[in-house]
Image (cartoon, rainbow, N blue to C red; front, side, top):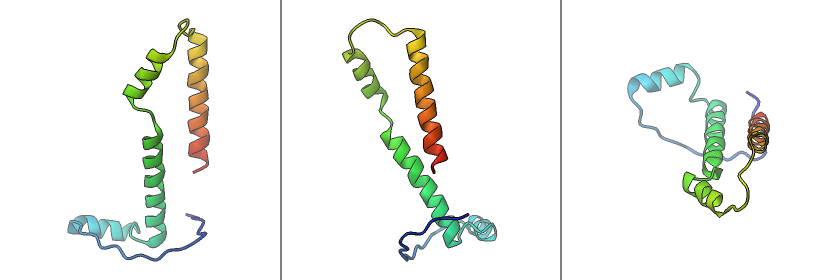
Length: 94
C-alpha cells in the first residue's frame, strides 16, 4: 500500500458495527492500521474535492454576471478539456 508517514499520531477508535460487517472487514484486512489510513485518506480527498466544487447556484450567479457574447462551442470545449486535465492530474497525484 505504501503510505508515506511523515508524522504518526496514535489514536484509538471504537466502532459499533453489525457482527457480519465487523467479521468481513477484519477478515479482509480493512481494520488494519495501514488499510484504515488509506481509506481515511481517500475519503478526505473526496471530501475536499466535493467541498471545493462550486454549487449550481454559484455557477448560475457567475454565468449571469458574465456579460458579452455567448461562448462558442470551441471555447466551451477548451474549458471542458482543461477541467478534465486538471481532474486527471489531481487524481494521479493522490
